[in-house]
Amino acid sequence: MNKLNVLTLLPLVMLFGCAQNIETPNGASQWDFDHEVQFKQTDLENGKHHLQVIAKQNTEFSKLATFLMRQSLRICKSYGFKIEVLEGVERFDDKLSFPNMIMPSLSANIECPNP
Image: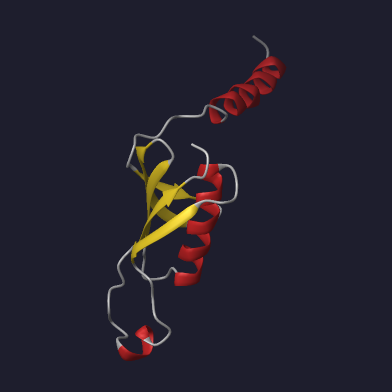
């Protein structure tokens, strides 16, 4: 095989290798590269899901909450979903009152309108 064929074939093989959609196990930890957050998504039953956005020291609460909303829309594929927040809501004065407090992860149950 000549050098030109190898240089043409190699990027094509790499592109197809990256395009494979690998299914993530239910409840496994995942990383969202666009929002730079770690999360766990668990399918509970038809149309109901549990989403935990894992808090890190350098991740702001606003980023966690925004990701929760966007991921809920992605899961349900339409508006009208319900979010039941279970824990992890940060108050405005938490960082001032408790600067070394370890914040819990933002955890919520999501219910889609039409499962």
